[in-house]
Image 1 (cartoon, one colour):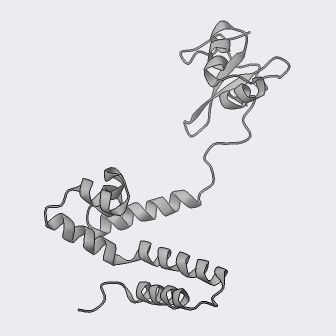
Image 2 (image 1 turned 90 degrees about the vertical axis):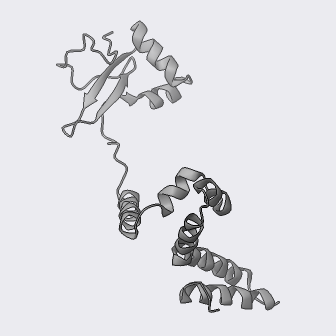
Image 3 (image 1 turned 180 degrees about the horizontal axis):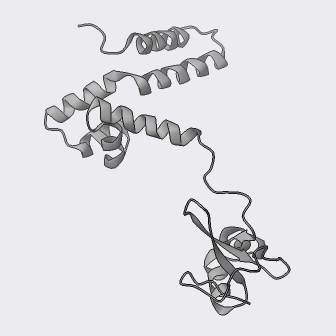
Amino acid sequence: MGSFLAPTTAAALERLLALHTDAGSSPLDRLRAIRSLQASLDQDPATLVAVRAALAADTSWEQVADATGLKPPAARWRWGGTDDEISARLEAGRKRSVRPSSVPTDLPGLSVAEAAAERGVSAQAIYLQVRRGTLVSRTVTLPDGRSYKRVFPAGTTDPDSSHDRSGDLQGDVAQ
């Protein structure tokens, strides 16, 4: 029987095995070979073929997940569906990973987390201070519809002082 691994994975495995038997191999070369094999195995279609064969043999997703060191939902996400569905999920993940953070950095005031860190309290304590009226907050809504709660501690100014801060359903409170 021939190898079930892709040629690139088999080559990465052979490189690692050669370093394994070479007493004089450099530690960095060994690390590179290990990482190369890991990357090759992650991309090797042999894993998907093995998962599909196991499922065809009435193996549960729980058993597949256990064999691969994943949780069942993660295994199902990685290997469930048709080739096109899997490719679409992976491509969407790659697109998400390369785009910058979607949280804008130029919002007025402080985020609840920033205000909590500045005061040395929890986020829940900040919300309580807003509710009690000891802190001013308002919800900033961006043109694309995203909303962010912003806190304005004493000494900071709300650049949008014309904004009606009489309170809304999100708990915004005027000081």
